[in-house]
Length: 417
Image (cartoon, rainbow, N blue to C red; front, side, top):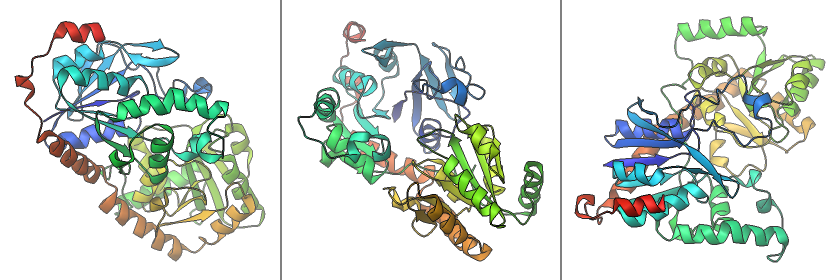
């Protein structure tokens, strides 16, 4: 079976779905191709240079490149802006040359899934989409507004109607959480009958608990390097140091605990506008971004994982490494915390302090951490996710006529491209 994944961005340094789903689909026997434009992750972010400039090389991907990568084939296409949004150049010709059985997009709206739906008419593959937009990053999902309000009407015209037209020829839309499913159906026009809640996964080869003396020694060595005593309870946050992620709240909570004489410390791996303030908080260390294959040792050096506001895939990685997780009480993806984490009242620093204090005993941290590591390995591994996706792809292809039997006009593809 030939599977093509269409990703808006790709980076070898990150552990996102575009890197890992194709890797594990290929291991299960599929011929996998990932097609992406020559753009860095977060290229639309206004603070890109300040946050990612020292970590991501915007010239890493060169249009026209084809290379083998972790068992799959990576194809890089040029891009152009159409109506203010990115569109891949030559996508139809690329799909024509591959002749896939399955095309999977990472979004349910936008140029990439729209073009994939268009070329499906000519090439006859089965189309799957996805939605990773949480309610926490989609403002309309968090307010009550009239269907005739300017904001709601704009969403209906630009997202809901095109999304419904796109949903019709698709097989399934994978929403990574229940709130993503709600956003997909209410705002992106996806038919509820086609939504399947399927979580993101963890690369359990990269992220797993401390299991031997070598890991223990590495933990002590890194903690010493970072200035954390062996007795410290280190709280780790990874990701952007931005206002919407607000890791500064955790830094202030840790500083308060330090002032109380409690053995808490904060480790912040990333960068962004809050970096200087975080570094100035007593007991806190800000470290620059690290490539995904180096991240495990920082989780091993920590004792608690904390993401104060928005969801993050790093929660799963930290849980797989045996850390108890703390997130805010409004997070819809409760499956990430069930049995292995706690919640605090969103943006309430004093409540976060109390929740952190409830994890002061190492036995309680170990109980939650062990449960989380087991749960991640059993239910959230990328192998588990990829196997489920592949079963869906195979089922969709049962009634599909062989592509070799379908006459496809290259001229028609080029005119549509």
